[in-house]
Image (cartoon, rainbow, N blue to C red; front, top):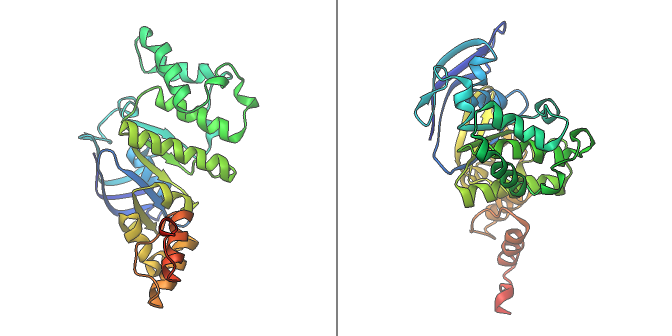
Length: 286
């Protein structure tokens, strides 16, 4: 469980607050998406969760952040890293080794994983990320999507209970982006890993996340189940969040009295919505 209470933070040397009175709870096994315009405080919030703030980025820190009962200010970053695995927006800067397996080995050795567990963990993490065939490849010869998966595999090898990802698909094509999200959903559903993703691709995020938190000017302006948040189009527009076209279509149909169901989150759901709005029978009934 992650508990954030009245968190405010200003970076050293800045007169403005990057976070202002943020309160948020993330239950174990949740899949939370965080959206908002540039400068809303999304990355700063993830830094507070994984302990990068205040241990690496200094500033004025008020409030509390607890991860599984550990206060992130009072807990050593290395201890936090065993509970919270982080994949940062700049994956190039995160990869330290020249060979894929060495990237995983570096973290395992650094965190004191027993030697007799290392091989099992490397094999399992590479398989979970779908990159077993890349084990002995040079990292500088990998595609952007492959590098993302190497960074994820290195985190998985440490077996964290929580994975925090900041803009994981920013440089990826749609297919590679979907692969990343599908991997996170599998880890969330099959292993119970808590997943928190900051993402600009709101349509894809809404398809996979269970809950959404909307940020603007350092505050959380709304949080809740994905479909409930998508209904609040005025709040989303005011916060500068790109509303998925499917959600906009659902809102327009609802305003005209043509549709009263839930906001669809994928193309299959959109097709069912349109059949409903047009008064057509479901395909299975034909």
